[in-house]
Amino acid sequence: MSKSFKTLLWAIFIIYLFVLLFVTLIYNRAAMVYSDISMWQYARRFSNLIPFKTISMYLDWISDGDRSNNSIPLINLGVNIILLVPLGYLLPSLIKIFRNLFAYFGGCIVLLAMIEFIQLLTRRGSFDIDDFILNIFGAIVAFFIWKLSTSKNVKSEKS
Image (tube, rainbow, N blue to C red; front, side, top):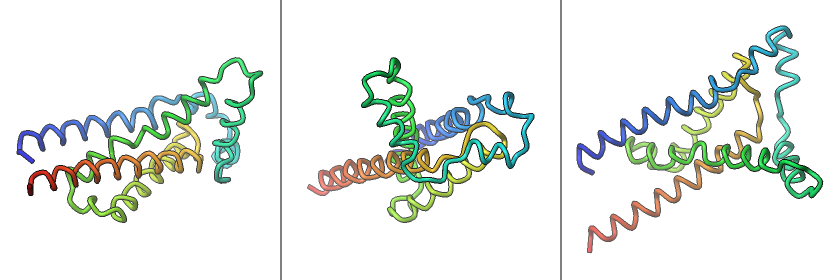
């Protein structure tokens, strides 16, 4: 990888991290609405620790023909899947240790856990295990796409 391309990737990665933090921590203004309740009440009201609860609710919403606006669950599911897709290419391309699936997976888990907890503590969103699952799914799919694309490049360079 050329130095100028790597510099470009670093610039894109930094911009991506700012966008990620903006979308997950700043864009949601729930804190202004719920600042009058205690942290415990907020956590109880805006946390989902039951895997697939929100996902199944959204899938039921989509399959229910009586709903007028199916774009809400589609957008929520889609955004949570694609949110970490850029990480699947950028992180292993830039930092060698993240070319290992387990290191990459661990890094994504730490990053997502921090974002989910900060959302909860700052009241800028909720702690939803389903968001976590969808984000990890998108990140892992993107990692395997990166892996396939780089293995083809390595094979073609050896030929």
